[in-house]
Image 1: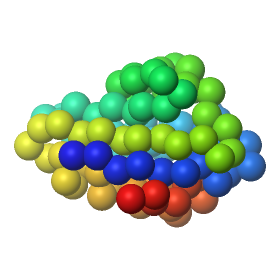
Image 2: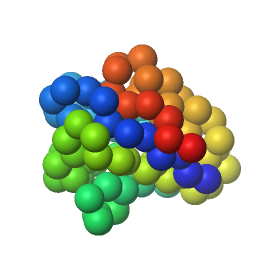
Image 3: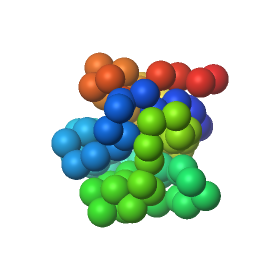
Image 4: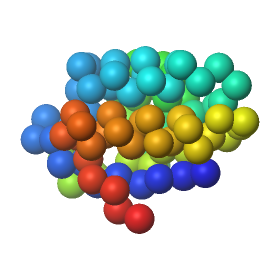
Length: 91
């Protein structure tokens, strides 16, 4: 399962929101969650991985979940993206 977001935060994805995403992804033990952007794919359970994407305003970020809780994980991550003002759903 996958959802794509357009980054709207004027600072892009930086430490505080990246931490919120990682903490949310880590709650889903039976699900692998990945972040894909700027031609790189990293685990969403690693703060350094997320920050290494170097996402700026206007970039797109795809969140990909695989596993028994994929739908729940994506829903929770979408809530973080929208409530934190990080991005808006593209698809």
